[in-house]
Image (cartoon, rainbow, N blue to C red):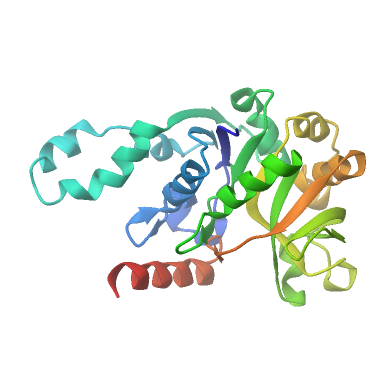
Length: 274
């Protein structure tokens, strides 16, 4: 039902300097696979094979990664190293990739709006690749959300409980519980102080968005930090109709932070080699 998935990937990744001075943060490897490849695998599992990536300056390696490297493949052809490319070859064969460039960093909302030319007038998934989500033995987070979309046909955001002293890092929601894991959003605040947060349910980097979000972002004024916030547009969407928050099954690692990146690397290494 949903075929397209948007990957905003134009940010500078300043928390990982100096590594990200010349390498996109989305290409940071967790064990031997870059973050964005985990995200594309999750999108593909959810049936989203049209991958739309919003890039920026210095991000050409993202395009190169999802392409054939003839010289490398010739050099390792017939060796035991060739099997190491089987996963990425499968992704390249099964997905189509399109790219557009965000010329100015004006917030996540602006990045989503930049991707409108790739998405068109249809619902779409969205993955923030520095949130690594893993659900061992079960469907990925985006696949779980795609099933919910079939039922509710509205925008859906993934949420998880975070400590109160960390709510200032996230968009935070509150609303009416439809079930234990599903909430109809009535409040949404971007990076509130702990005393102002409506709950401790934080939005993480998995979304399903309906196409009217583009018009809402276009009408959204700069908010927190002087940036165009996707949470402000989603709140306007919730007031006009319906936006759901879903407490997903699985684990999420904040690979935008050094501590979260190390935790994810250790977890994935243990799963692969223990």
